[in-house]
Structures are given as structure tokens and as C-alpha cells.
Length: 143
Image 1 (cartoon, one colour):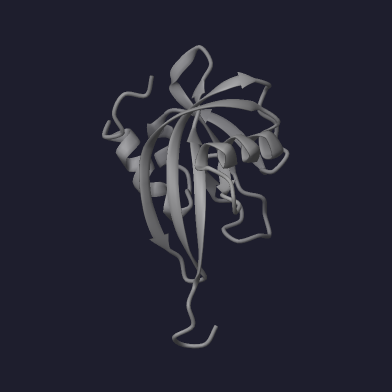
Image 2 (cartoon, one colour):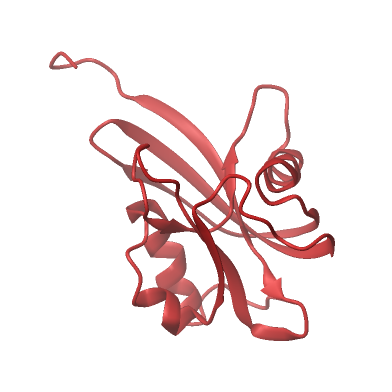
């Protein structure tokens, strides 16, 4: 990349999905090896495509990558992170599983973890601020 060249900016939506029957645990996924930020953990989700609303993008990404249907709730958190290769505008939504059992179609691994357990994992840098807010109880009611 030449000096002064504009970095690509991507709008990313992520889901905070409570485990059915246990609202203290949430679904996180480990990125596939080999790609950017390979094997780091993150909240499930992905890029917003042109013409999509954020909730539509989140539902589509989770259908494609996890084989689940989501009920997307309210927006919990929004922020941006500057990586060396791109800028991520991240928006986190509360979401509930409507149907399906999460599968690793687009992830290396999945886990249902408490926020404290998540802190012990190597997370993508963009996901750390909302995770810290979740741990501190700053995201508001999750119901």
C-alpha cells in the first residue's frame, strides 16, 4: 500500500446470541485459519452488502455461515477500528436463534461462553470494545 492511499472501509454487523435456556452464555466463533485475522475469535456476523439493511445482512450472514435463522433485536453497540489493512465499522445487535443449531460452515470453531470466558480468548481487535462493554454491563438490557 502506498503512503497516503485510502484504506478500505467495511461495515460489519455482529450478533450477540444468548444460548437457548442460558442467557449467561453467548455464541462466539473462531475465524478460519489462513485468512485475515485467522484463528482469532469474534461475534458471529459479517459484511453489509449494498442495498441491505444491517438486520438483513446479519440474518443473511448467520444463515450462510452458521445455518441458523435469527430474530434480530436492537442495536447494542457501534464503533470503528483501524486495522493496518482496513477500517472496520462494527455494529453489534442482540439476536435470538429462531431455528437451527449453529454449525461451523464459515468458522473454524464455535463456543457458547460467558463474557468472562471470552476475555481469556484471543479476540479480533474490533470485537474487544463491545466485549469489554458486555463484561462491564454497559450494553443495557439484553432481553
